[in-house]
Structure formats: C-alpha cells, structure tokens
Image 1 (cartoon, rainbow, N blue to C red):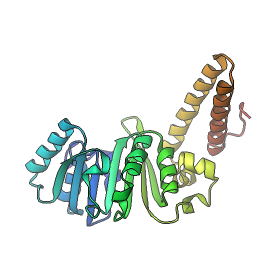
Image 2 (cartoon, helix red, strand yellow):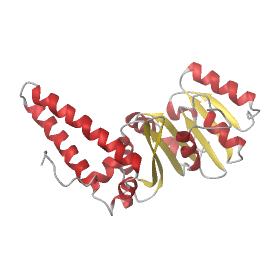
Image 3 (tube, one colour):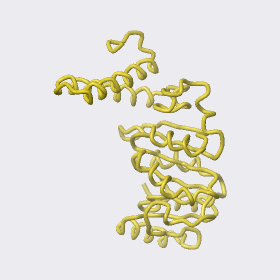
Image 4 (tube, one colour):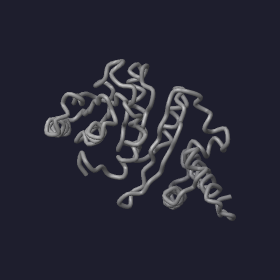
Length: 243
C-alpha cells in the first residue's frame, strides 16, 4: 500500500469522501488516504492528524515526498484537536475500535459544526458508533462490509439528519447491532462475520456456565443468549438451541 494504491479497506473509505471536500483524516498513520485523495484531484484540502510521533513523522515525510505540502497539512495532536472549526467538512477515522472512534468524536463535538460528512471504519464494535450517531443526531446514510486478508471491516458514512431514519424498516435492536443497511443486503462478509461472532458468543456462554453462580454471571449469560438469538434470526436459522 502507498499513496498510489490503497488497500481495499482504505479505497472503500476513500470513495465516501465527497468530491472537492476539505477532509481531516484522524489517525492518518502514513497519510496514505489524504495523499491518495489529493493526487487524484478528489479533495481541495486535507489534514493528516496523528497523535504519535513516529506516524506523524512518517506522514510528514510522505506528504513532502509527494509534493503535496500545499494541499495537505500534517498535524500532531489527539483526535480532533488537530482541527479548528471550519478546517474540514469531512472527517475520516479508520482502523480503530468503534468505542475509541465514538470517544474521539464525542470529545471533539464542538469541532463538528461545519462538518457535513463522517466516514468511519471501525475494526470492532461498530455498534458503539451507531449509538453515538443516534445520540448526536447524525444520520447513517450508507454502510459497506468487506473482507480483506481474512479480516472483515465495516465502513459507515453519516451526515447530519434524521438519526432514526435508517432503522425504521428494520428491527431497531438488530439494526443497531449489525447495521441497518447491511442487514437488508446480508452479503457474504456479513454472514461470515456474524457466524464467527455467534461461535464466539457460544464459547463465552460455555465459560459463564462453568463460572461460580452469581447475579452478575446470570445477567451476562442472558445478554449473550439474547445476542445469539438475534443473530440466529438474522441468519435465518430455523431452529435455536438457545430459545
């Protein structure tokens, strides 16, 4: 992967960045994403934000080597600290856990006033992002799920709007867990992901069964059973040993 050829994961993120956007890529690592967008004339301005010194220096080096310093500003800081209101109208955050992405957005909410689109790619726990979007009145407008190098990724795009709109045609609890758009399509990576999750939850349930009885253990068991039942309904399993 480099500034000319992105991974499938980052290519998918890139396609949701609006043409001509002023984009801030948070946790930009080598600045591959904003550099790729700039080299292809897709953005008018970019920010590559990094909290760690090593990746920050790598991003700076790559941007200078590509002659993109007049378009891309490489900045060191934690989360949305690297932008000021009006700096960006699109924010991308990719390759982190969903809870961390939600936390970054929450801590920098005052920076989002002029942002029109969020493009988010959590490695795990996308439900945390969907819940944050609902709580903060961002409407999920699209989702994709892909598989690359035996890993499955979800990409979520959102804009300010009716936060509950995507969930009106699907069961809410299921939609927020697996994704309202993904639920309707049920593509191969989606099925693979949730079969693996179900297997993991069954393993957890068995561990809880072996644990010392307590109110907390019983509550956790019920939570796990509920998730398993939801996923079995999603995957159209006719019979469930958990019902």
